[in-house]
Amino acid sequence: MSWIFAASADEPEANSAIAAVPERLPSGSLVMLVDPSLAFVMPGLPLLHAAAPGPEPRALSVVLLDDGRLHLMHRRGDSRGALAVTLADMAEAPAARITYGWDARTGRHFLSAENLSSGGVALSAAAGATGLARQDVLDLCIDRRRTFAHPALLSLAIGTGVATVGQTGGIAAGTPVATPDGPVPVGRIRPGDTVLSGDGRARRVLAVTVDRSPALGPLRPVRLLAPYFGRKEDIVVDPRQKVLIAGPDVEYLFECEAVLAEARALADGTTAQRADDDPWAEWHGLVFDEHDTFLADGCRMDGRFVGRIAASPDIVARSSLAGLAAADALPVHAARCHRVLAPWEATALSEMRRRRRAPVAA
Image 1: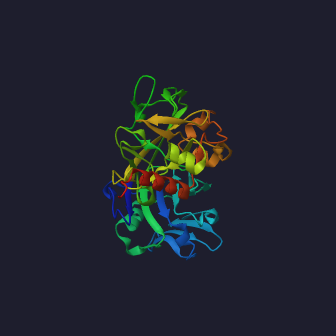
Image 2: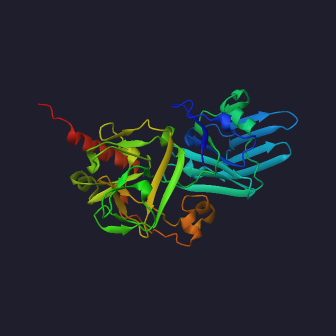
Image 3: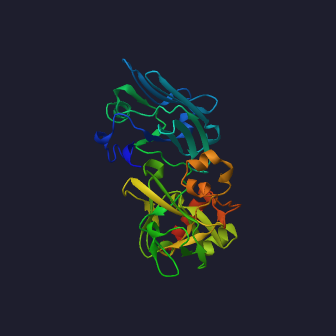
């Protein structure tokens, strides 16, 4: 898929390609990042609303109701579509990713809400895809006189294909991954290849997932700076990518040898920082039959944790794990190989590590 437009408070307009939009988008995605805590302060006020009268009236409205349900209503002429998911479990989340995707070829559309903190996904799918037209895109992105946006709306993006859901992290395409034959860019790793785990064992790759999404607002990439975390060069990762950390600070704080921490919680400005790279991110993840870590330029990275997502076939079908499910090869990961730190724990660890590196005043 390709992205037509994206905008956020930090990035007013990224790579706008409105001129290339066809009159009707046979498939596409509308992706919003929202602040649920602010949205719940003013329930009933649309997160996003655009409408235009005329011979073929058009309207698109995304509204959070008092009971925590998120409703999407879309009309174009006599065609109408409506979907709903619950955001009640995400009221305290720092951010949520809302995706409206449609495919006119199958006649289906879906609405999903993803908790960017816990990774939880709520999804509703149905027949009757209406999809966006060129004029809808113009109203939302360029001529916004007919558009209302809630203060809780952090960013908005529109793409020409159906975006994947359930994204949980990943590393940039050119990042070298350690294999028994030497480093290989992750973009060249294929299912069946052998890579080295975080502790140097040879592990067979079951699948390589690729997720493409605008890296704006809370999803801005994180640059892990060399030589920290065992790296030789800076590498760029999804802010939700988990990094394995070991050492005396970990043993002191958590009474274990190693822990996993999200990259965004490690962005202290010295060892890692938010990156202003290309906002059109492509994140690669490695899936193993049993959850494990792998070495990326000396840094021990968390492999993709599948969990028990197989129990949610609608979510799997719209994720980058769909190919594994179709081949009846989707694994079940009962637990991660290491403890995952809560955000406040990761921040405390990052601060302790920062102070250990700081000069001591006389």
